[in-house]
Image (cartoon, rainbow, N blue to C red; front, side):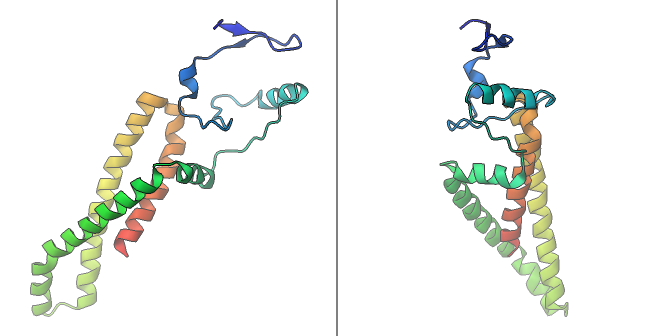
Length: 169
């Protein structure tokens, strides 16, 4: 491909990007635009003059979550995550069973024991969530571009909060 291509109708030439720029874009024509947004209005007008329909939305947590949910492998990943969390919860409860029994025999109120167990479990889940968020943000930033990291972190934080809440329940 040439490095630059002119618009139909004699517009200013535009730079041709490689296919790798679209590797993570859905095939429905939805694209993430990053950088300076000053010329987006002009771009929409020029596309409209060429009979190209456009619809622009700002990135939001709900839209990003819907995009992730629609991905084919999302269901399997969620089921695996909840199975892992359930196993972790059972492991946590079994490890703490002896200490819990000793505290009950020692006269500690049961609600206090439950709150201490949930607090410790929440701390362990939160620590692992922070480690996963940091590692995955680094991965996304290095391999896919740092422009994707803020929206990725927003969606990941929402998913992690849902998993932690379900785990605590």
